[in-house]
Amino acid sequence: MTRVAVNGVTGQMGGAVIEAATDSEVVVGFATSDTDTVDGVPVVHPADAAAALREYDVDAVVDFAIPDGALTVAEACVEAGVPMVVGTTGFDEDGMARLNDASDSIPLLKAANFSQGIQVLQRLVREAVGTLEDYDLELMETHHNRKVDAPSGTANSILAVIQEERDVEPVYGREGHAPREEDEIGVFARRAGDIRGEHELVLAGNDEVLSLSHRAEDRGVFAAGALDAATWLVGRDAGWYAFGDVVDA
Ligand SMILES: NC(=O)C1=CN([C@@H]2O[C@H](COP(=O)(O)OP(=O)(O)OC[C@H]3O[C@@H](n4cnc5c(N)ncnc54)[C@H](O)[C@@H]3O)[C@@H](O)[C@H]2O)C=CC1
Ligand SMILES: O=C(O)C1=N[C@H](C(=O)O)C[C@H](O)C1
Image 1 (spheres, rainbow, N blue to C red):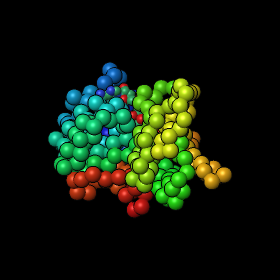
Image 2: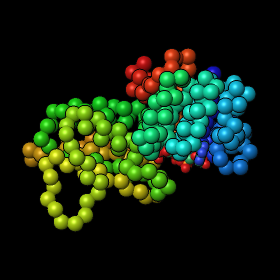
Image 3: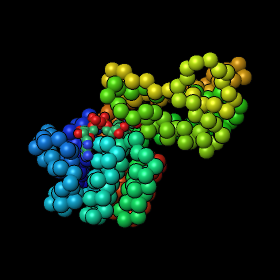
């Protein structure tokens, strides 16, 4: 049974990981709040993460926090030699570089979305955009009203796939009065209620519209994917890994 530490354990995803852990065991969590335990899981301040990783004999860290928090725990994982699954989104360029540096010392697997459906959606997007070369592209995402980063990490990952296939210029929202440029891709982020995560790419042209979309019904889908990734990651060489490696395993 994989012994897991959860970074961001007091959050929405932290709770979902604890709930989803059946073939794994959450033995400790990291958070800055002064909570002592979450659902019986001891909570440790991230500043003490390296010692806790050793004390609780952690096999892998599953991270769903904030970028700065993920980077703090990544340093602890390097110090303790513990693999890390990074689910947090919203990293800037420097943050991504620091995660990449950490992967020189530990196995690190980062995914903006740990659902298998989004992995398949990205593959369908690549085929559709590569085939329907002159169709207009518009990308939408919708999340709960507590989400602080926009566009979503998943939307950015879908955009990255599109940009590997076609030169497009993202336009983040639209207002005012101007024609749509041919190489534009509109990117829109909606925030409402407790929507778990919806993504849609519209390809329009040639008197037809193709829509590729995904909707997460429960945070458990992400938690299960991250726990599978953690078990898969244990024992591997140091390096940068992707969730597609797990889905294809
Ligand atoms: N990769 C994926 O499949 C998914 C990724 N996410 C991402 O996970 C992150 C967390 O999402 P939620 O749980 O909804 O947010 P949340 O706001 O409910 O939870 C974040 C948690 O991090 C804690 N935190 C704050 N500062 C910290 C620090 N320095 N060290 C450790 N923990 C700290 C907060 O106390 C909170 O408990 C977001 O970036 C979100 O985009 C969310 C769902 C799925
Ligand atoms: O904040 C969320 O909830 C989610 N965030 C991830 C993202 O930014 O793509 C993944 C999922 O869509 C849920």
